[in-house]
Amino acid sequence: MKAIVQTKSGPPRVLRLMEVDTPVPKDNEILVKIHASTVTRGDIHLRRIPRAVLAVMGILLGFKPKRITGHEFSGVIEAAGGKVTRFRRGDHVFGTTTGLSDGSNAEYVCVPEEWKTGVVAIKPAAMSFEEAAAVPIGGMTAVQLLNRTKIAGGQRVLIYGASGSVGTYALQLARHYGADVTGVCGTANMELVKSLGAGTVIDYTEKDFTDGGIIYDVIFDAVGKITRSRCRKSLKKNGSYLSVKSLTHEVTEDLLFLKELIEQGKITAVIDRRYPLEKISEAHEYVQRGHKKGNVVITPD
Image (tube, rainbow, N blue to C red; front, side, top):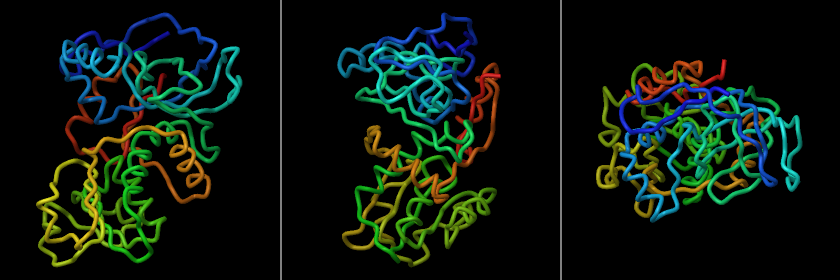
């Protein structure tokens, strides 16, 4: 099969499109024919970490450097191991490869039916494969961070970086919870953020949200570019400051919660660009510029 292999750290050119053996599922695994995967900001960071550092992380934390890149996927189950009970051949699924050495930027991937660090579930019927591949990481991150506070109807929530992957999901989730949402983004993305439900949109190139005199119940930094101290004068006493720099983990229940909202028409995926597998380096170059809208999707063809 074709796959994107990384053997050393560095710029996008270290990624190689190679022919490798198609994996064979173990008793507890499913073999998924990939219809779509993604390139995330996390993929960019991991590509740059020296392999020696990753090796140490593996010893200390059980972290496995990825031979094949990619953390999100959607596709169709081609085969299932004998001990698999939740899935069967032909099921349309989506999920992550977090904690596995072989990722999703490939034609096929094997993932366990259940494991500690990643998730897989039946794909939302209302979504295309490309849209579904773009949900898990950004969506689950937004769910977990928002769950650290209780958002009540009418509360003011500000999403900083509202046009990115985590930001677009956080905005839609906050609206679902009944919040009055303000989105902060660049000029080019203001209409997108408004279309996702933001009652107010602030262009950060024109105005600092902390100068408006508005006090928020929750400030969610969805891009890791602001600090709690900067937000202090705009945050309600005992309000919540949330940041993507906080640790999160992947939980199947969160993915199923997102699936339910998607099928109710309350959550949608935003796709900025699509690249074929052989142009993975171009996709990485685009994502690392830091201005993508929503998600960048990779297709095998």
